[in-house]
Length: 489
Image 1 (tube, rainbow, N blue to C red):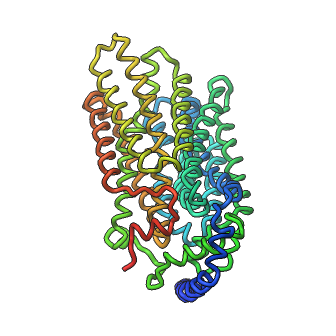
Image 2: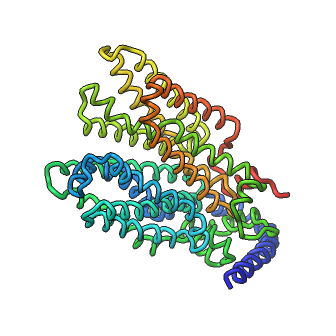
Image 3: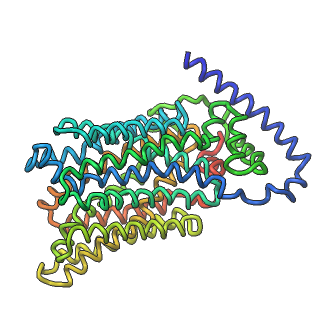
């Protein structure tokens, strides 16, 4: 039954696209002077799409919050739940969320394409609400792990859908700026989790409140999406042309509906079906853009960003700085870099920020290598270590952090966008997991100089890769990007 419906929808889309394209050609020829001198020469108002984007970025806030929520309370959690001193159990509490996120990310493309972007947001909010509630009320390790896994599945679905949604509902001239909101919201989520966790050592059971707090933005996300626009790109793929026009009017204004629909129809490939499988992403004509996306996420993680986060407290403590203050410094550097990215994304472009970012990270790792080669008693070593970490985080948050999540939905054709994002995000989670799992052991066996040299080498590899493979998408419509990267046969 579903196959028949999809086939009918696809046939309707192809017929209506071609017919309407001819109709648009006639209308454009008869009214070209009027359009050229009229309202469509202006740019859409960013104010119409902003509320929809802000609601979507609640996912990024939750992503950051849940990654940081167990950092401060972990000791209290282990004591209250009876696994104090069991480092394996403590590691599972932290990493179970990553396992759930991997599962969720694999499913995110099918969910986003199957039920639409808005409902995908609502579906990802449910396991985050239930999972956080279970974690907040549990009295044993099994309940905590179950709650963390459920939260992780929601986190796996949410970020890819947020990247898709923000890309598809944003006017081209502010798409980069809006994409930076995701990184800023993630930073605020991490900082919020650290702030909420401050009283955990002084107030018994405070860690339960830390989990309860996360249910509020998750509920706001589910409720807010009721009032947000659906992605016109998804509606058009379903053959729901009239609804796509209505949503474009909500997002861009009535005077821009015609040109937005014309752009969609230009990139429509009537000879293609809607069904997309992994083999087509890995071996078909879309392999090049999927390879670029997956490699960017792999290099992002192999740069060592999560390892730096994990190791930052130790370095700061060795410099005589309390861990709480160290977290504040790292959070400020992360937020500052995200704000810089927000200001520059649509001015300098995605590719420039990526090149600057990975180059800055390579220089920062060189500072770390130099510091590791100096005597531990040398004050210069401590300054280089602390300064290197702060500049590493700052450089990361300017480009390597926010750009891939924005760039990939831009370069993926609309037909494969959701599933390709799902595949690339699963690569992100796999490398994230293994870097976090192996970092301390590699640090013991290889030493900081060699390990940070490896991270720096990956950063330099990323510079070369970006320079050779990544196209600039600043100011281009999604349809222009698609045609440039995947010309019609």
